[in-house]
Length: 247
Image 1: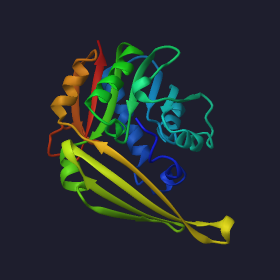
Image 2: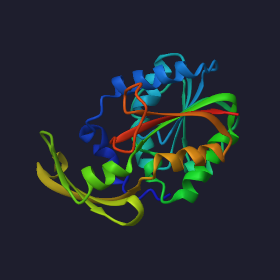
Image 3: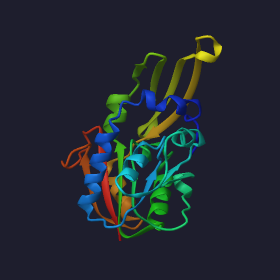
Image 4: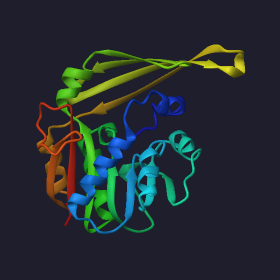
């Protein structure tokens, strides 16, 4: 998995991200408790700037935050992180010092993997380092979202000092190629606008295929929910949350 797309974008990620991390953290915490997992060593896979890592640390978990992007982790280190261990690692080559009791991967981290082979490899690495009975919870953008919502659309995000244009280009097999142009006022240049460009891709899969990949990498008791609900997920939803238990 390439770090492309998380260089200069990392510095703007939190300002442009519209997600409610308190709501997402509470939902993930609820789903973890529902699995009955008892341990408190938590891996936050594709942790980004560490917002969910900090959420779970405050709730008594011993947190390991792993992300492939050194720029994203650099942003995470700007916040208090006592009780959190950050690792710069590709999830397909995850290599921990010990085992964990649970793992989360939020905000479509799995979609960033380039193909099914990489997804299976990431699932295998999580399985390898997870204690028996541990819980793996992650969300994914669905094929419906890629084909109908992202599609070939362009989105604009704006704050007081940042203007972002996000362009999507659909490709084969549920892949969407994304190009981001960011314009930011730079105080170091007397308030002039600076432009940054990033690009990356996301790939979506049928929910049944994701479940099979989990089964084939040592997980059982697999459930999929519509985003932030307790309702069973369907292919017509925009986002699904999977929970699975290490066998």
